[in-house]
Structure formats: structure tokens, C-alpha cells
Length: 265
Image (cartoon, rainbow, N blue to C red; front, top):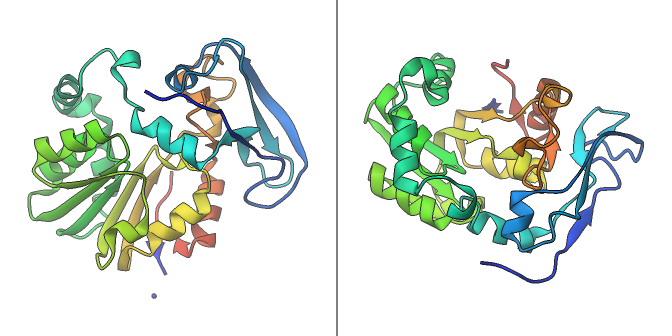
């Protein structure tokens, strides 16, 4: 899309009684789950008795969880999101495994191929929710070192990993445009982040404000076709995700945020 010229405590949830996009309160249940959720476990919540449900807006079709974490609990979750207690490898092992994948097995390589005709040959790139920097590693490898590269990542250990392994600035913390005051970017990448956000429209507007004229946002999320295809116990249906989009939803959110779709799939 291009811009137009250890934690414990109270468990606070926001009930999503109406659609964040169209405001409709009419909805239908898509899927309900109870039992194990690793992300609830990180927050020391009784995940074995918890019940989560996905509901679909009958007017615009956006799928949402019936309730989400509030801002404080969301921040706590992502401070320890990649905790070793639910990961089978340490940060450097993760980085080595992903960056050593051959091109035909690398999602990050395919992302670069997909965007290569839409972005300039050099410039500045910001990866929001960059994790351990594995996408930025591939971006630099694919497009060359003449790019000015930055990232932001809420899990501090992984922000430090990305900065150390790539030799670039990676800001620790949740994304806020004011963290980049005075900086504008040619490309902003948002890979599997928007579905985690409390308010995706505010988030996209903040990202748009950091784009140079004719700048590009690369945005990728899971698709609603996961319902009925993936098992209900899959990680994608856990507490971490607030929204499930279709391609039309992403384009609609983008337009409302002041962006113009230029390529979608």
C-alpha cells in the first residue's frame, strides 16, 4: 500500500461488542475454544478453564475475538512473547535456523521477491515487530547493504538480538510513531503484526505518518480461510490474535488509513 500525494496480576479484557471497522453489533459465532493457551499461561492465567470465541461481523465480514487484552496486559504479553518456556530454542538458535533456510523454504525470501518490483533500489526501511531480525537479514541480503535499516520490537531480548546480529538500530517497545520523530521511511514492513493490535486502524495511520511521499507499506497477515482448514487448537487461534482479515478487509483498512492499495494477493 502506498501513501496518498514474569508477570502476574489482574486479567483485564476489553469486550468487543461491536465491529471496530463498521460499528455493527450484528455478528455470528465462527469458532469457540477452551483449554490450553500458551499466551494465557505466560500471563499466569488459568488457561485450562478459559474460553475464547471468534465472531464474524454480519455487515462487513471482519472476524474478531469476542474480547481482547487491554493495553497494559498487551504490553506485558509482548515483553515476554518469545519466552523460552514456549520456545524450543534460544534467540541465537532461532536466528541461525531461519536465516540459513534455502530460498525455496524461506518465507522471507519470498516476501522480498514479491515486493521487489514495488520498492526503490535504495532508501530507508522500518520493520515493525521485527522479532529477531530474520526478515531484515534477508532484506539486506536480497536488496543490498545500501539501505538504511531500522526495526522496532516489543520483546526486548529479541530486539537486542536483531540489533546485535544485524548491526542496525532496533528500538525495544511497542510501536508508536513518536518513537521515530523526525524520521520518514521509503518502505515500512508489517509482517504478521496487525492481527495482534488492539486498534489496527490507529496503528496503520501511525505507520502511514512515517512514510515518505510515494512510500510503500508491505503488510501481511493470516487469512480467514484458516477457519475450517487449521485445527481449532492451532496457535493462530490463541489469545495473541485479535483479528482475522480477508484481502478486502486489509484494503479497506488501508484506504481508511489514507493508503492506496498498489498490489495485493
